[in-house]
Every structure is written in structure tokens, then in C-alpha cells.
Amino acid sequence: MKRRILFLTLAAIGILFVMPLLVMLVASFMGVKELTATYGGVLGADKEGVSFVLLPRCPTLRAYIELLFDSPGFFVMFWNSCKQVFPVLAGQLLVAVPAAWAFGQYEFKGKKVLYFVYMILMIMPFQVTMVSSYLVLSKTELLDTHWAVILPGVFSAFPVFILTKFFKSVPRALMEAARVDGATDLQIFLRIGLPLGYPGILSVMILGFLEYWNAIEQPMTFLQDKELWPLSLYLPQITADKMSVSFVASVVMMVPAVLIFVFGQKYLEEGIAASGLKG
Amino acid sequence: MRPQISSASRKPILRSKGKGGKRRNPAWRFLLPSLLGTSIFILIPFGDVVRRSFTEAFSGAFVGIENYKTVFANEAFTLAMKNTLRFLFICIPLLLVSSLVLSLAVGRMGRAKRVFQASFLIPMAVPVVSVVLFWQLVFDRGGYLNQILSVFGAQPIDWMNEDTAFGVLVFCYLWKNIGYFVVLWLAGLGAIPKSYYEAARVDGANGWKCFRYITLPQLVPTLFMVTILAFVNSFKVFREAYLIAGDYPHESIYLLQHLFNNWFASLDVQKMSTAAVVLAVVISALICVLLLLERKIGSED
Image 1 (cartoon, each protein chain N blue to C red):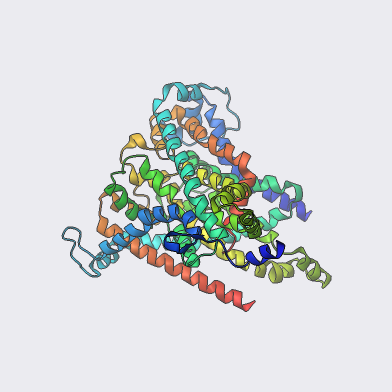
Image 2 (cartoon, each protein chain N blue to C red):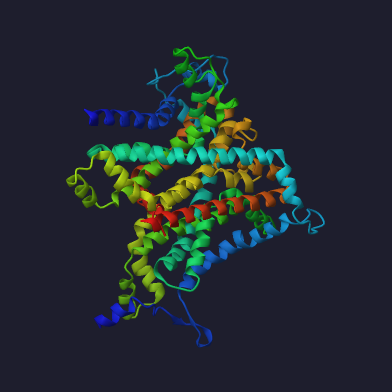
């Protein structure tokens, strides 16, 4: 009995958590008339209040078609998002993975201090480092280019921090054995480190994607030119202009992130768990 | 061959020869790109930021703590600092406790555990900008929340434009983060050896006693990192605040993040530098307190 009450409570909370997604999804299949009738009160039409609809009365793909064929702005911004997110991830692969390998597998002078610096950098909010990054970006004339968002993202401390915990669990005896067989440090990293660390690398990539697909602060600060804005920042402007596509645009923006979540949940959870490990 | 390997695993022999016969640790080669980038984009310019916080904007002359006096006398700054601290001290404990309770409940669910975990975690995957519309539907004057409350005879409230805006922000933060922290706690809970509980059961300990004397103390090491992550994520609540309420929201949720943005818009580098230094110092102090607390609790065990 007690267990059943607990189950039902959890189920209710679970539904509450998924509710926003469901409402958005349902609304994305509505026609303009139904949208206005249901949500017009909030979205600007002269109507009082919103009503709750479980399923659209006459579901239509009209809004999707309008978004895909009649909203060039949406594509530009979607593309901008891709141009910023994937280079950040690629850069993190090249920069953060080797750095984490060094922290996880080697002993060297100043390691503790350096790792502590990375931890502090991970903790500091964007606002602390934004002036510093701005000064460099403006001196190198990278402001108002995609690089202004990409470069500071590549050197984020968070992936180094999480990956170090994954690489620490690779037994060092493996590296010693390979060295006895005459492997160089680089070969060991490529042939042992990467294959054994790939769950960690995957989870860092997933966490990174979710973070930068959702970027607001960085593009808002470093990109004055709205033509360069990613979808995560520009979407409200699309929805303000065209109520008919507002829900569809939100849903399409959500789809890549939710897909990655569904297929990568295992790695995502491993990454989260690793971020909670001490040391 | 064997004994050689095992003795080597203790002492690093991982050195290659650098220039001039000097032995250089190969670790630096792996670290170099990251160190270089971090120095160029963050560490070195932050030194410049510290310098600017002590100088005048145009002449560049040293002015001592003049900038700090200006910043601390600034009403927007004190309001934003106050709001941000209030948000942190309310949100972080609330998040930690509610996610711990949920993780204890989810942990007992057996087969349904994965489904619950997924449904709590999915908000962290959803871009803020995608759900902003939904929050507007809920918290608008004519929105769902007021409609539900009107059943009980409550007067409609414009949630985002009154003191209640703070509560809305707390709610959005919890919605987005609880799943992440349930996973964190579950990892911590999973690391507690089952034998502890079995032994306690044999001694006749009930559920509450097990929680109080086994679970809680065993979670202390997890608590440190979990608190830090809750702090890190709490600064990102600006996304919700900004997308729902814009540059100048209701004053109960005017946060440091808004202030930085607005100073940035007027390119007030001196003020921003000073405030960044103040923020960095305050956060470092908070981390030190946490570290000390952790040491103290750890040494008591």
C-alpha cells in the first residue's frame, strides 16, 4: 500500500515534468484558428485566458510546412547553431581530451595546483570571465564572428574536469605494460586511452551538446550582429513575428536535443555521475 | 619481466628526453593546448581585468579602490548582489533536499526506476528557449496557474511582474535541475555498501535509523561536489529569467547576470571589471568555506 502511494506520487511528479513537452508538441499540430482560440490570450490576440487541450481537434502539419518552406530566418539560425555547437565539440575533443589524459594518468610537478585552477575555472560563472574573454576577442578582432562563441567554449574547463575522472579509472599498469613493449606516449594515448575512455568522451560530448545547443549568454555578449545568432537566442524573435509557427519552431529546436537524450541517456547519466565524484 | 612492470607502476618512469638532455614529462605535451588556450582566453586577460579594476577608464591612472567604492555605492549592484545571494541560499538547499528525497523514492522503484529517472532528467535536455512559451502559458495573467487557482477563488496574479517572479524562477530552476541531481544522488547512494544496511537490520534498526546513521553520513563526500554543481547551475537560471522577462525584469529577479549584461551594453569596462573581481573573490571565499567544512566533517569520521 505504502509502496503504491509512493509510485503514484512519483508518477504524478513525472507527468508534471514531461508536461511542458507534451503541451508544446500538441500545440505544434494545431491550425492557426485553433491556436488563437486556445492560446490567443497569452500570445497576444484579443482573447482572455488559455484553455487546456489534450489533443488538437483537427491536427494539421500546416505549421510545420510553413516553418520549413516559408521561414528562411529559421534555417539561417538553425545553421548558425550548428556552426557554433559542432566546432566547440570538435575543439573540446582535440584540447580537453588530451589534457584530461595528462591529469588522469601522469604525475607531474604542480599537478594538484593546476587541477585546482581548472576546478575553480569550472565553478566560475560566465559573468566572471566574460570581460576577460571580451577583451581578448575584441583585440583579436574575433567579435561578431562565430569564433567568438567557439573559442571560449573549446577551452571550457568542464570537459577536462569530468574526463579526468574517467581517465583516472584506466589502470596505469596498462600504460606501463605498453611502454615496456616500446609504445610511445602518443601511441598509448591513441590506442589505449581513447578506446578505454570512449564512454567518458561520449558523455562529455553529450553534455557539451546540450549545453551549447542551449547557449544564451555567450552569443548574446559576443555577437552584436543578429545575423549570427544561434536559434537558442533568436527563437523568441521568430515566435513574436509569427504566432502560427511559434510552437513548431520550439519543437524543432527541441528535437535534436531530445533525440540525443533518448539515445545517449546511459552515457549522459554516467557523465553526470562522474561529475559528482570527488577529486 | 613481471616484477619490473609492477615496480614501475608505482614510480613514474614516464619521462622522455627533452632538449639539452633535460628530462621533460610528456604530460605537458598533452596539457599544452588546453593550458595555452585557457591562459590566452581567461587567465592572462583576467589579470588585465584585475588591473583595470584599480585604474581609471581613460587615463589609465591608478586610482586605488575608487572603482570598488563606485560599484558598492551603485544601487543596481547592491540589489543584484542581494537578489543573487538570496536566490542561491534558497535554491541550493531546496534543490539538494528535494532531489535527495526523490532519489530515495526512485531508488526503491525496481523496474520503473529507469522510466522515472528519464522523465525527471528530460528537462535538462530541453533548450530553455523551447519551453519559454510554455512558462508564459502557465504564468501569464490569463494562464493555467491562475485558472487552476481561480477554482479555489483566488484573484488572478501577473506572476512575472510581481514579487512572485522570484518564486517562478525558483520553480523553473528546480524543474530543469532536479533530474540531474537525482542521478548524482543515486550514484552516491549506489556507492554505499549493502552490507552496512544488512548489518543494521540484523541489529534491529528501522528505516529512519538506517537513513540517519548510514545513508546520511555516507553521502557526505558526495555532498561537496553536489553543492558545487548546484551552484554552477544556479547561475544559468539567468537564461530563464532573460527569455521570460527580458533585460529589465521585475526587481525581485534582477540578478548579477542582468547587471553585467546592462553594463556590457553601455561598455562600462571599469565597472564590469571591478564587479567581476568582486564576484570572483566572493565565490572563491564560498568555495573555501565549503572545502573547510568538508575537511572538518571528513576528519570527524
